[in-house]
Image 1: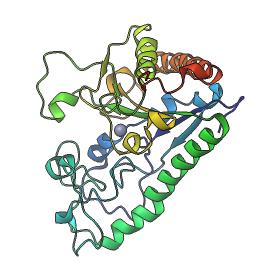
Image 2: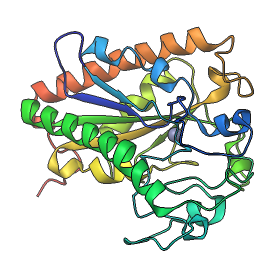
Image 3: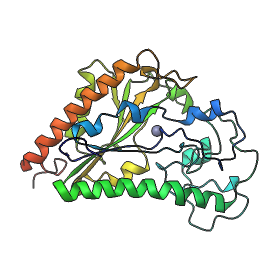
Length: 287
Ligand SMILES: [Zn+2]
């Protein structure tokens, strides 16, 4: 919750959880499984409440259930009995085993040596997916009720070999920070510009939608025409994390300070936008 006067900012970190539930039942090395985490992203952005924002983060790991996937993104081949609901498996689910419940680690090792019962998946949806999604929806609803508008930062980190992992070839090295706005649909160009400029001013290389444009959470909430702007932020793990041990690396403290500075720039942008209604709905064209 905000630790100072609240502003119209809600941050969420869906993938930084590292508390592995007793009923997970995985059969792969924990060190391999942990590479699915966005480890310490919640800690990097921990100053969000100090600028008046709300910060929501998961405790459970994203490999257990991924709250940034639709609950229809089910890999039916990993189940022991038929899924009773609708199924709309994404390409990442079918090709990389990274749907709602992961079947594979990021090194494509099988997470389970067994089939999962649909009741097991349903329990994870009820105990983790739904509460997380509800908490974020409620925070954004309350923010819009209080301020008329809301800005949502969906926070992640990416492996330093992201292009390889995605099976892509790029002419340029992976950026330090990747901002995803669903190719301009989830927030105004002005907000994407603000966050780009804030990172670039500190010397970070920023790319937009390459290689990550955003997933289910910003798709659900990012609707600038109705007053909610969502932006996904991916930070390159080499800037803060030992990717093998999952411990902070030598650059961690600097990166955390830089992120806190970016938060202050974003807070100033939001307060100016709320104070000046002429800036409203900047994605709308003048009639
Ligand atoms: Zn993530």
